[in-house]
Length: 499
Image (cartoon, rainbow, N blue to C red; front, side, top):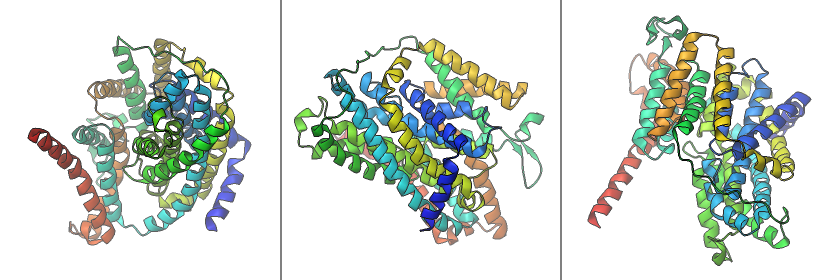
């Protein structure tokens, strides 16, 4: 009942004209960037961070969430029409969606994608509404040692989840943790790793790091690729709407995809890629039309797209209740919260319930907006694919530089932006994940603060870290998550050697 009352109060905030405008701008931007290959919601939120720092915090975060949801919708359009997923989570959709488009059924593929996204997003947001207060009640009981253990779980799982190699993920994380040490030590008042540069005494701005790694680094990486394979754009032929048979074959995959996407997205090591491929394999096993898989089965579009959007709502559960980002876009949203001096977690629900519940209520509105806008504007989204990449990325570079200068007018900040851009390019070039760097910078100082508090309370006894059942279990999970990828990799090599 409390959740219903809180949601009703949030709805009164979400329907305010300015917040509706922020949500509309967010979903339009999100869909547009989701359509453009290589331009994802994480990059867009990173670009907007410097220019939104003086705007209303509630409206800006509603816009960021709208970009997240819209990016999930838009990624399916390119996956279906040109076999190039705008987001990695749309890869499963491309398997059957592009085959449907080539067979002249691009319209029904886009329709089942949009409606399935709406159904899954709505159900998953309801799940967020009721699960979040429960997790907040649990998190209120956490002590500093529990929070430190939780940060360790976040560090390990984020490093293992992003990218193909856990070693590379951990390397990226340690870069972020090292950057998080820069600045004045709160307890001793001594400067650390600032090298006498006054602009570094306050630490490295997360917005500068995010824009440099995501926007500048991506632009440099794309510019370095001389040979880009052009995909053929499949025109949308025939009706955009679904037949009665299409509806019959889609509604169960929508529900199954939601059931897979939301809980996996809510896990600290969740993300959208795992549930989308699980959904695809599930639908392939359960279908009554196995001969269509590989040639354009509508279930292979409906299920993964539902899982994709349900996981987006699931990702917001650990972000809002515990302050843990489980995707690159969630890491950027965490940076957005911190830009306004807000720290997601149980205290945020107590201190700013208007902001949290206004955000949750706005997700329902954004979802409805996306359904209404997506299909009628499909022609506009397709035209975006005609923008030449040199123009697109040149604009991103200008936008990134101007936004950073506006937020922090300093030559040192501009130099750091350039340095982080080169770092982002090198990381993309050598396949190192970028998100763990941002997570390390944001969560590193928090983990350090909680560790020092726990050790101060226990008079320096390190056993305090395992005396609490919560912290002991979480540290064990972190240890298993750290060792398991290496163990599985070693077993795979051992079997390959035997064969």
